[in-house]
Amino acid sequence: MSALDVLYVEDSPSNALVIQRVCEHMGLSLRVVGNASDAIASLLETPPRLILMDISLPDVDGLAATRLVRSLPPPLGSLPIIAITASAMAGDRERCLAAGCDEYLAKPFPVRALVDILRAYLQQEN
Image (cartoon, rainbow, N blue to C red; front, side):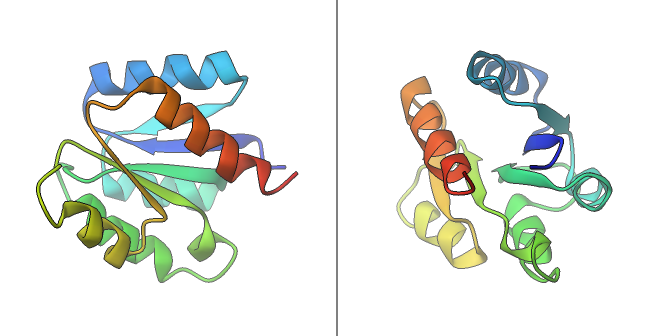
């Protein structure tokens, strides 16, 4: 198991704090980066077991970042990616999945939904 369980790509400190608390409660290690460029650098430095990807980012949007991750060779390119976004309009979920995300959570979401997704994807390796 890698030293990093979850990489969260999020430019909002308040959103990151919520995810940080959930991960701490679950005993998971978390690294938060604020943009897609830092996400790729972090991914290459210490591969996580799962990526939480905000879709609205300051440099490259999360869909483009997801496609970039998917272009990396395995195992990096096949890491689970969960889209977390305030975009909850018709078609947003489909766009996230088409870009390569494995799951989609629209903000605001019930904490239980995040916990269930984290458990489901992180248990797969055990």
